[in-house]
Length: 131
Image (tube, rainbow, N blue to C red):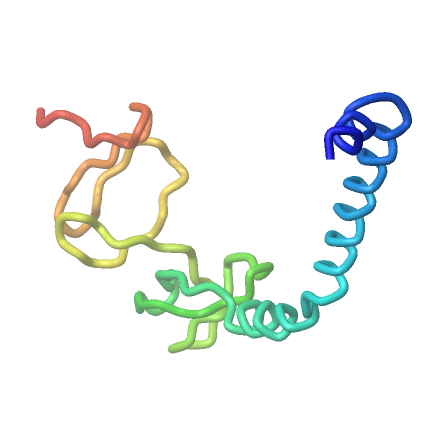
C-alpha cells in the first residue's frame, strides 16, 4: 500500500492520477449535458413569450385606463381596447389616489387627479417636499 501511495504522489504516477481525474470530470460533464432535456424548457419559454407582459395604459382619445397584455417587443402607442384608436400611452398607478395616470417624459410632474408630486430628479424617485 505504501508503494502505491508513493507511486501516485511522485513522478509518472502523479500525471496518471491527474489525467484519470480530468477524464472523469469530462465524462461527468458530457453525461450531464447529454442527459438534461434542454428541449423541455423551450415550451415554457414559448408560453411566457406568448403571454406577453401586463402593462397599464391611458387612452388619449377616449380617456379609458386599465391593464392590458402586450407582446414584449410591442411599442406604444397601441390600439385602445375600447375605442380602437392608436392613441394609448403607457401608464402607472399613482401611489396616493390609486388611479392609473399617463407616464410623463418630465422628471418632475404631479398626478392630475390628486396632485401628488413625483420628483425623479432626486435619486430614488423620492417625492418633492411640500411647498
